[in-house]
Amino acid sequence: MRHTRLAKHREPRLHVEPGLAPGRAVELETGQAHYLRSVLRLGRDGAVASFNAVDGEWLCRIAEIGRNRVWLTVERQLRVPEPEPDLWLLFAPIKRPRLDWLVEKATELGASELLPVWTARTQSERLNLERLRARAVEAAEQSERLSVPEVRSPEVLGRVLAAWSPERPLMVCDESGAGEPIGEASMQLAAGPMALLIGPEGGFDQTELDALAKLSFVTRIGLGPRVLRAETAALAALAVFQAIAGDWRRTRTR
Image (cartoon, rainbow, N blue to C red; front, side, top):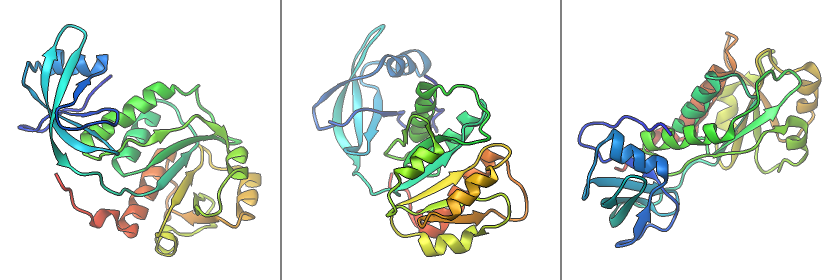
């Protein structure tokens, strides 16, 4: 598992399971242990910041370091848990390495769930969910967010929509030009749970757009005068929505 490079004088950040508390011992996963021992070359008493969405972020010290295992001792809390946007990103899978990049950047931009969906024109190799989840963890560690977005197993778009809760508006990025500008739509829908849907390379099939237009929870949106690649569209939509919804007015607490 690849880990992010860290700014000078910062403790390495590692995502761990909930249960952090003063004095508690935490055993790291094999990849994390290798990173601290062989990449950063930390030894006993080295400082590590461990975090998760439930406990916040805690300063820990290396209590034991061996060939295949590392134990941390939890010392004190650095950040309390923070509310984060309830923002889902639905996307048609694209090919590597652009899919890895999409997952990484969507994590940095605050997406809370990543949902791959199969559409009529989806053209992609089989998804490696373990790799994508590892990318999300790495991006969370680098970006100093406390949570890691859930990367869900892929589903057919029609099945996802059939089970959709109307309490979560869905903004669909419509490359046909029929949607309203994303800025205007975001100002109307910025409060509460939200989801964004990005189509595949080649765009949605017309039958999919017609079906989406009939759903009461769907708003078709446009992303300006240019046709964007799928991964660019995803990040543009996330960035615009987050800025308007207020996420970008928050400040870093660490």
